[in-house]
Length: 73
Image (cartoon, rainbow, N blue to C red; front, side):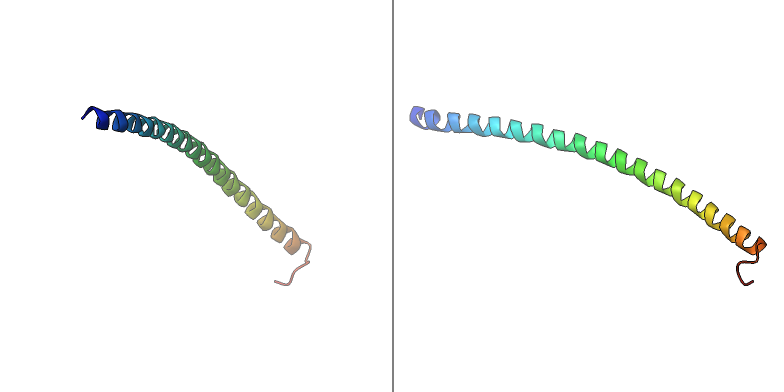
């Protein structure tokens, strides 16, 4: 049994070490994904605000055009 243990234990230790590195990498990826989601959410909110402002500009432009008789009613 000692021979088998001498072979298996180092292999299991190597696998355990590699799994630890994988867990660390996955943890880092999770953190990065969270930060990306936060930033994308912020960008979406900013885009929604910009779209509202652009809609207001469009309505104002239509009113100006009507007042100046630049468009057909």
